[in-house]
Image (tube, rainbow, N blue to C red; front, side, top):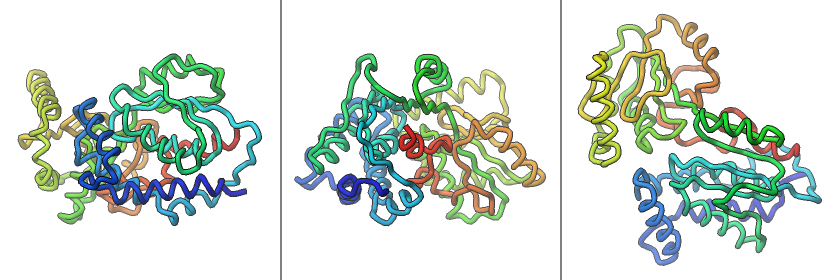
Length: 341
């Protein structure tokens, strides 16, 4: 059985709506007002980053992509829809939207608790969908979650421990901190290195798909990384980013760490994956095999892998923040989870 056609049609219309977003057009006055509120509420959200998010989602939610995504699934006929509690992060614009549309397509109801720093954009999206089908499917709350049947929650590692304890009696998906990884071999083109720079600095590096760890062949010229980052130098003019850069640089200097920097970004040789904002860690390798063994051992810390190399499940450099609809966060199939409730 396929997903309900009216829900599919509404999602496709939303994709078109987002693809054509233009804050100067009267037709988008309501959405632009939400964008203004979102920027006021979260200093990390900018007009540029929000518009990029809209464009990415607009491309993703075309009919061809949605049909390809849903083709493997057999949707159940639901006589008694469940209520799914969604606890969403707020690190980048619309970060919980994929969970929301999975609930929408599965035919269940959503009880949504937005992060305090992302309160305005998601309700616009749900209202658009609900208006298209004339059904109320979502409720937003800032109170204690009650009267739900399953949970999808995203947060820090500390928050995840709380979620695991509090929601242990419910069917659940609990997501933790993860990071993007890039594997280079030294033959990357200038365009690919610029793409890597975007993977590192889009959304100021706040997303779980942003690259914060580099695997480099021994002898790799780190100036190539800085060259790819150069066109993103304006990030230092963003007050929050600039403050983080100054603070993290001072901490590393006082700790007498060895690192390189270019005035707006820092690189440090380190075995870790989760580098501070405005920086990335790197490790050298001798063989790709040793990299793959380490990645396998650390897979719980990795959200995505970007590379020009023929490596399983990797994506091209520059596309870290453009996941396909079927690229599930933490590798957990949200639609399958919902369809099996």
